[in-house]
Image (cartoon, rainbow, N blue to C red; front, side, top):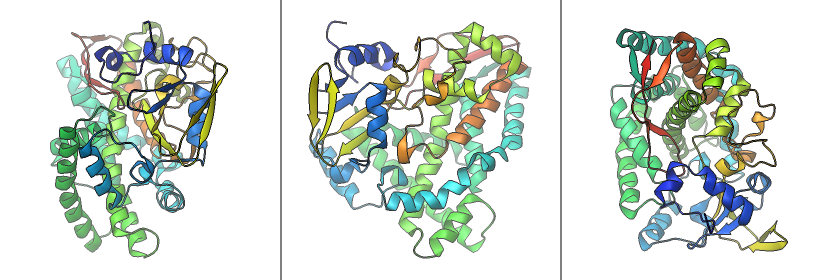
Length: 403
């Protein structure tokens, strides 16, 4: 690789980005793309940026860059919409996070373990009878989707539509998303919102002890959460509540199968929290997140000072930070006993640290741990395929034989 580049259109980059991250981190750790976006690949830069109050997550409001007229029109339109907690800054972010965070504590999630185990066992019973499993369609998607549906007491008869909508909507998060894909995302949201609205209205009449009922109660209290904020959060929760976990389960399983010595440990002991942190570090489901500087910010690299102006899109590469050798020894090796694996950036950092991290880890522990402990022989059949995405990284298909 002669000149380091961040080229999301390069199929090799999409398929295996880590060598490209290495080259950027070594030669241009503060890299400006031809579109004017700044890419950060060092752990310290990524961590500092994500924790800094000098940056905003509200891209529509503060970014001065748009790569097409269609994107600019979409950005102008979205400025008028109520944003999800993912794209809010304090004080609104602080207020909403306080309302919803109590539902996602590790102790609250631990109460779901029995239900998750039941769902996983049902899938694996059927897989044992067949002697095979298509991991994504049979396990990685249906279990997290059912869990988030249980949490919200949502119906599941439209699961296939929900999966299609969620994939279309997450496609719009890609820096390479085409104008057509952005339009498809808006169309998917336009279909999803009326569906969720009907469920919300029905739930208002019959409140229960589910998470949606508690959110409605907060919204009806007046100044805690508006109706539009409730809808924005529900869309985010329903999409992010399963989409990234699908990829975490798939990526983790494939990583273990490609490292038989580490898979042997899971066969014997199951998955510890430390081991899941290492799987998140090694090949996490979210590779990047974006911030916008609110004032000039500076980075030092190779004896130079780089000043980044307000409004510039700054892409913090979580995947690159997780493979920074100054923090993680031999970063391209999978070591489930890595002592500092908990320092990974797979869930981002700062005030936007992933709200559902405890749930994602629990679901992965049960799903992947049970798979390997139950079946002494798990083997890949054929060639695994990856979603052709850059930000949301995940195995698209993983056929396995089991015995």
